[in-house]
Length: 188
Image (cartoon, rainbow, N blue to C red; front, side, top):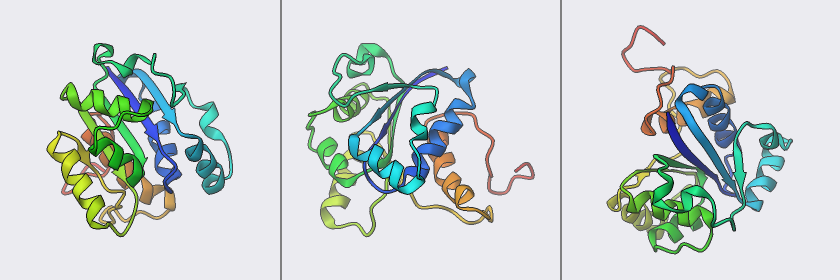
């Protein structure tokens, strides 16, 4: 049973966030607590890209970006991991610089200082040198950069299946036991 924080930024890629939350909701036996922080820009991008506000129906506790009383704003809350999906380069830069000016950056700071798993599903392309150096800094601090780069060896047929190749990788990195395509496996 994992206590997990999911942060959703305003970067393009709401399909990844939706799939991640749906997949976590489908494995409640592995989630002791699912906390979600969603920026106002993320809500707008979700509604633009996905055409709905379905995030409101997902079985998770949502926190404001200004709620510093959230249990994961402290290491004593014992949240095992945090997945930022999609992770904007602006947010990544604030994390890399140690700027904790909202609940997302504070939670990321806590996860890193407690030596727990921070997974940043970065979405921008191409990367400039500042992005690359910020990814290096977060990696050196113990974070995991998981670019939203789909794989195709599973032969995905739909946009959702393509997005699942990224989401499943992030869930694997967070230590969830999920059923997904495994290279070289007979059970897919």
